[in-house]
Image 1 (tube, rainbow, N blue to C red):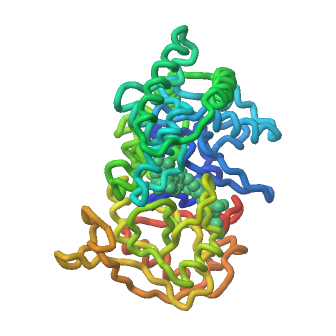
Image 2: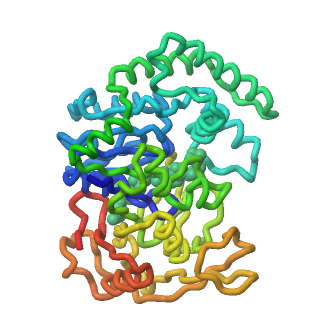
Image 3: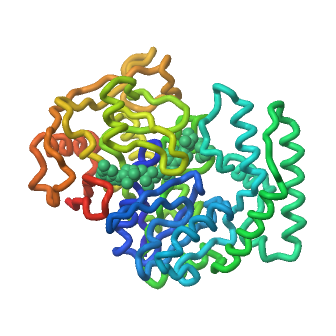
Length: 423
Ligand code: GDP
Ligand code: IMO
Ligand code: MG
């Protein structure tokens, strides 16, 4: 059985958590393949919102298995907080939540290094979530990292101490010192390690290979978005993992020819949190309205998200890089009330007009060119079927499908599970 992928096509926060939750009833296994607690995936049902950071968004389904794959980086402390928060829901974690032994661990000192590195960069900071993501992936590729499987080994404490001491030396190299109480941080960390040990620690690639052979249906849940990809994103203002389709192969051990559908998810406009270029960003009342109506505040950091019009140049690029087979459009309801809706179709560069994403999309290199489409005034949040859509909303969808050469299969009109329309 093939493995389907669900990936964010913009700068993250497209609504991946919501859609994975909606789709879980069609799958046996939901697996996260990259990122870590920098992610904040929001699910809403029965009037309650839940934000997940490392735990896959299939966790509320009564039987689906949720896997944290080898490509993910786990902060045991945040992970334990997530488990504690979900405790009232009676989820049988020991049966349904499996962790790859090959997933790397975020140590307290990784978080300190993230903070020190950002502080040292000053104005040029990435705007990281300060969860230690960059330093942990650096230790992974530098072959110094500690993995989940290490916590049950006899030499675990030695491994930990060696890496922690290395980090402390590195921290000394930063001019602006970070204040911390290592003893306290370690106390909380080691307590959290004990709760990780209560969960099944598995060879996740083997588990998934067996599941594929048995015909189990698997959905890989992406974190972040394609424009934050370490290779294809707006480098250096990116995260440190492969957020695109290839990341599901390396982050779970799935062969490329085992990939089935690739679901690409996007907002009907664009948001970005943190630093970095954003050609269609709005600094006016329109952008402010999108942020307010769309409640655009980071699910992990609470920071206000920057807002702007939809960028088809960037979206086409993401569709190509990922091999998207089906699109899902979120938050069309947020655009209700504008007379016209703008969509960026090309960039003007020093070398002329381009409709592909060039090396740099810095403001001095590109300026966006727009077409204007008629807006819709109706409230979309109560709609339950496509034939109820206002004509101008139908036109917007039809225009995008044609421009992107990919069908839009799901239209989301609100945060709740029920506000999801299949086409
Ligand atoms: P993720 O990181 O991709 O899972 O997305 P986030 O959870 O960070 O951000 C998406 C936000 O939009 C959350 O607050 C969701 O509850 C909300 N949301 C998702 N779909 C819709 C929608 O169609 N309309 C509206 N208004 N909100 C939505
Ligand atoms: P989800 O999965 C939006 C951004 C940060 C920063 C950059 C690098 O919820 O869509 P990092 O902490 O990864 O080193 O930060 O990436 N970023 C996200 N933005 N959604 C996310 O995840 C993000 N994860 C990281 O704001 O600009
Ligand atoms: Mg998010």
